[in-house]
Image 1 (tube, rainbow, N blue to C red):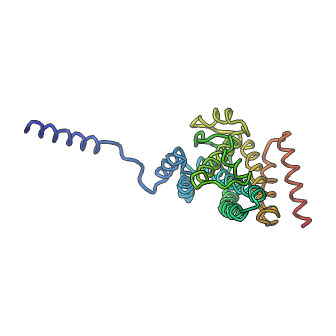
Image 2 (image 1 turned 120 degrees about the vertical axis):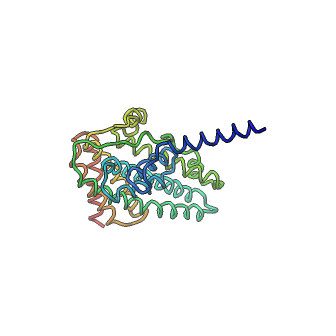
Image 3 (image 1 turned 180 degrees about the vertical axis):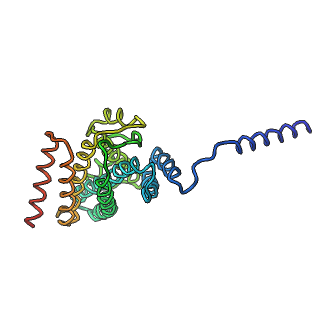
Length: 276
């Protein structure tokens, strides 16, 4: 009995010694701490916490700033796009469900209300990005979780079917993951090509030409402007601002068939705003 107690005491001492000799993590509140925390929450799919950590990190200049800012742009715009997609499906559902359209319209208002401040944060962060220099942009956040396939629950929503709470939560999580993934692949120069995007983003030292990133951001800015058209939030000034910033981003992107097509859409949206 005594021998067993001694062995137990020795085990405890060994554990305590090993713990005390383990390397300490980054100091809480330091740039390294927020960078590590952002990587952990991003891998876990907790994008709200990740955005919070990145915002804390970007509050001051540090050795992580050039990697954190593009990541924050991709994540913020992806989450916003996810809420916009959810709202659009519920808007269709409201037209399809004639017996109870109000429950769908409430969801539309909720999701667009969440998306709005995220889009404004994205615009502010992109303005900050445009003040940076360099021929390449670091995409050092890894390949996001999720799939590019739309959440199956949204098909039911668009058909006017009311989901149970568990399905509502799952649809929201999958739709946000999907849009973050699509935004990340677009930023990597692989729009609608997750296989190619995965190859780029799995490199921990991934860098892409700045023009490629600017084109991706121009696309995102234009897509974001559509949240503010007349049939949605009806804010023509926001449409103009987002489209003007998309136009500025396009000037930094290489000329191509895709950039020309986007430029045409941006100019058409600007002309429409001027007429109202």
